[in-house]
Image (tube, rainbow, N blue to C red; front, top):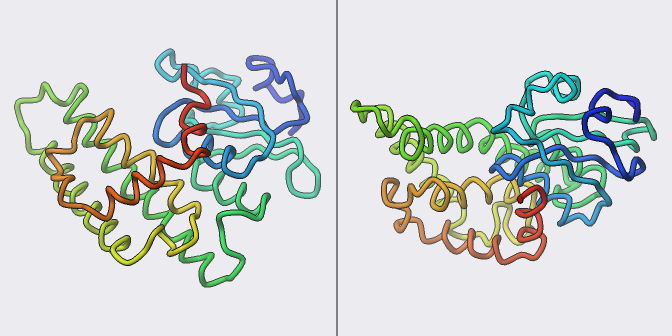
Length: 231
């Protein structure tokens, strides 16, 4: 991969020596914006308008054949060679390793942290997203409320797992803020904010999650990261 990659014909790089971020202000998209702001790594953001189907533009598909944001192109990847990468969880792990931040070098702690990132990727994201569809978007018009109720119940269960995890911990991994927190903050924020699903999941029951969310959203890097590709 190099700066002659097809992505740059569609979204030119003004600063080709910097890491290039292609994203949108969704819960998955903001993960990488937050991570980049927290690490202080030099980067150039490009907003991908997913409502205009830009993530299925042939140039974007050349970077991510799955047609989803976020994706990155790092001109200084491993061994000094360019690297293109998609999937937000994979990008968080890559950036943590690149910068030596937010992922412990201790092998046991490292894998436990990655475990919680995978939990977010495989559970929280899909379930919260489906609840958002059935509660706020097209699915809310469906007369049959069983799909909505199913996803509400599973989202509440996941919040209970998160609340238990945080009961005796400041952050997901204890005293140290990590990519596990970064992966989750945007999704919990979105569930009770943009999706308006606080009541349907009984969010007020989860005091530890609320305390953790407030602490995370108070971080300057998180605040900046949430705005990276926003209008």
